[in-house]
Amino acid sequence: MVGTFYTAPSPESPAFVKVGDTVSEGTVVCIVEAMKLMNEIESEVSGKIAKALVENGQPIEFGQPLYLVDISG
Image (cartoon, rainbow, N blue to C red; front, side):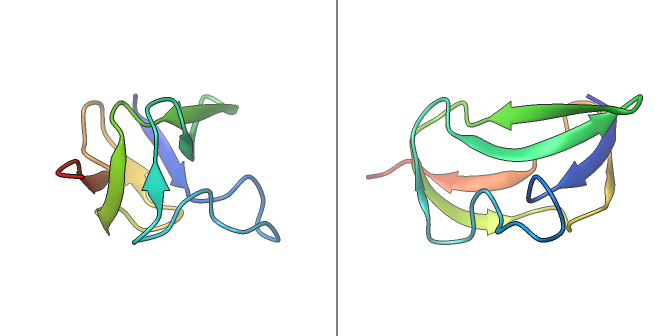
């Protein structure tokens, strides 16, 4: 989805995930604001967050990777 990437639900809140965190399929990892709607984005895989590929507040494009997730277990 095209929009703006946010790491947390509000500026005062902690990030949904950070590098080193373990996530499961369905874990909310960020929010993308598109057309003034806040859309929670869920992880499609289980594993450990290896790298964030987008900065908070950065515009993103459809299909753009947001995180690298190590699924090796």
